Image (cartoon, rainbow, N blue to C red; front, side, top):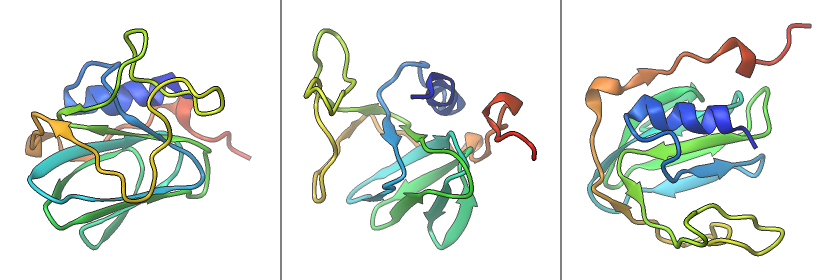
Length: 143
C-alpha cells in the first residue's frame, strides 16, 4: 500500500529497499522471538510498537531477543505500517516475488496465529537502533 514506508523500513536497517518484509494493517500483529536475536524496523503510519516493556511509535528500529514479544497495533493515524527484519525473511516465491495478494490468493498468504517465521542470516544492528526520521509526506495533514 505504501511503497515509500516499506522501503524506508528496509533501508533504515541496511537492507535492499525491496527486501521481504511484513505489511501490517489495522488488525495489528504480535510476534515472539523463539531463538536468537534480530533487529527490526517499523515504518509507516502512527502505529504503536510495544517491545521489551517499552512503548514507542512506528518509525523506529530496535532489537528482538529470544523470549521477547513485539506487538504492533494501530495508533492515532495511518492504516498500514511495515516491519523489516535484519536478515532475510524466508518466504515462498511466485514469479520472482515473495509478495502476497490475499484477496486473489497469489503469493504465500496471510500470516496466521501460531505460524513460525524464519529469518535467515538474522542480524543485530545495534548501531542503527533508535528513531527513523518520518518524511513530511508520510505524516497526516495538519488540521
